[in-house]
Image 1 (tube, rainbow, N blue to C red):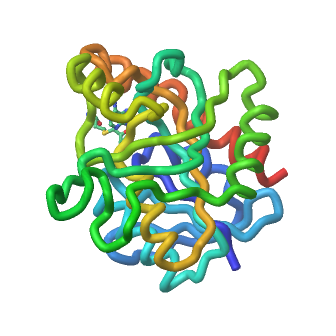
Image 2: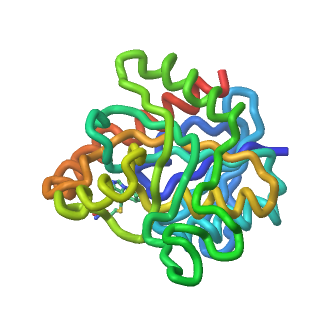
Length: 230
Ligand code: SAH
């Protein structure tokens, strides 16, 4: 059974795709699913596109149609906690949707009828990812903990401060992780995610982000996945 490698943007996945041998693409639900071998492992790589719905749809196809062993996400995120700086790497221990709010019917952030706001990642795969990060990017600062997701590109100091105040243990913010974590819980599929910090989710986020994804995101993703599968 293949291992799934998922990113949101083309720039995050490009170098990973170059590493796949004998890759064959199949079009499903408007996306290209690339199946092949990477460092001797059966893999299936796909660009999910941006946001929670796109991520959930992709994870569902991977579970239902490809019966993957596990889903690994690699990409970029905005740093939230003080000390989570551009170029640092975050391996998620758990995810939460920061824009989920069905209060007063359910507590703020709780996924309705799941009885939880936080969705854990797979311990074993997360440790393997963290150790791959240390080997692939020995100079990068590595953080492990909560990552929050929502359908917003957080790009103002005001907004990131509000998130920091309401969710003080959140390390980073992005737009897909919690959706995949929820689908993986539904299917009992192991899930792990690694994000390089592209910006600080503040007023400079947009400029920082563009430059970072062009210069670094793809290289980082590929180096981490190579180290993981070697
Ligand atoms: N304005 C951007 C939109 C990309 S959305 C553009 O010009 O293309 C940002 C992507 O990177 C999402 O896939 C998300 O998961 C991640 N990301 C990086 N920094 C983020 C931030 N500050 N807030 C939310 N998502 C962020």
